[in-house]
Length: 136
Image 1 (cartoon, rainbow, N blue to C red):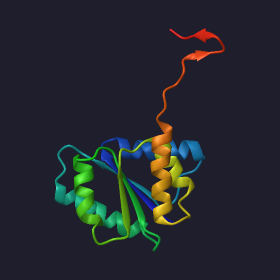
Image 2 (cartoon, rainbow, N blue to C red; image 1 turned 60 degrees about the vertical axis):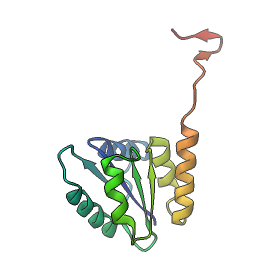
Image 3 (cartoon, rainbow, N blue to C red; image 1 turned 60 degrees about the horizontal axis):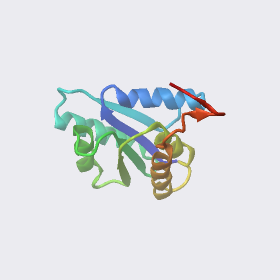
Image 4 (cartoon, rainbow, N blue to C red; image 1 turned 120 degrees about the vertical axis):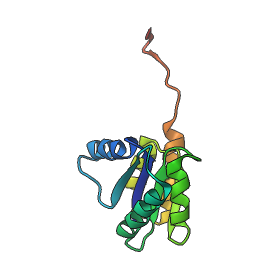
């Protein structure tokens, strides 16, 4: 099963696991969160990422999802993933995570594509008119 590592500015990563656990009504296995504090050193973050990747990879690979491309969590992730079977996505959303968790028994490539599709499809403009009534 593909492992999933969420790496974000604190406290988002753990919050995503709590939200996913609420939706699925259990804590998904092979899912970990690293909340990056403002004063954490890049070396410390990279060490945490390396250790998490080892724990999460059962041979199927690991999908790493970060919050913002170019941010410290994303920048610290990339060096740790170079020599491993990983994919990295920036721009986490709950629909993205739920989709990744749903398809994680497939290949890492499929899980990555499904996560991206979940993120893209999960961002929609809602019509605020319902049955002829407008919300104000």
